[in-house]
Length: 357
Image 1: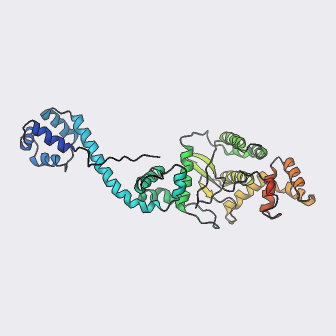
Image 2: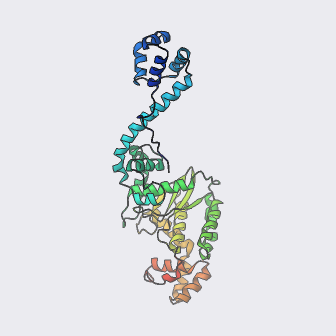
């Protein structure tokens, strides 16, 4: 997190004070200095009282008359003006404390985005720095509009402030990572390589392998813990010109993880244009893009024709599910998740066959 300077004009020396002391040491009046510099007495007086700033031209003139380097005057001036600006900023941050309350502060603290022991104005400053904006108006114009443009589950409470935190956390996690050029054709061929990863004994290893495969198509993959008020299972974001799939692990089961991944791949391949998409992947909204992404994920993980043949003769028990999953090259949890989505079995049935993350 960004540390905010505690500089205060109460102890920062103004260049005017130094000027007054320098004149006293030389037994020189402000009027004499004005004549020597061929400047109005009013200008010298305003510099002495801090009302007027010392410009580079004035600093050079003071150097010639008083023998104090121009760099010294300019350094004093810069530090003094910054201190005044920070004092004004501190007052403005007091007003941002109310804005801070829109966000899930406890989660921001737990994830290290905000210092929980800092005063509220400092926390507001840290949050602004986290988002890369100067004030709440800047946040509203940039992140407020971005977050408001995303549609999530209509069944759960959604906060655009939380959505913005989640999006920004993903953006910061990506950092300056550079990806190869995006190749949609290559991405489409990866489906058959990604499916078997669901059977991996170590999920973390499977995710790492998925990252490698997706990177070969110019697509990034990043996992970000979900935020209260942002009920998203996944997202597609174009960051620095590169496409990134963002997953949350919100449902904590393998079938949801892989369905979300293929859902977002479906958005990229079936959408037909480059755009950001953030949605609740199992949302039952009848939007064409959601229907298309869901259909892509379902077919990619378990082809409907194969499922129909199996269902026509199979008894829905653990052994049958496990054998069918092995034949399809996917984990039993994916078969269970599909059966639950299609309401072939109750949502609580066979959950022991799912890998919980």
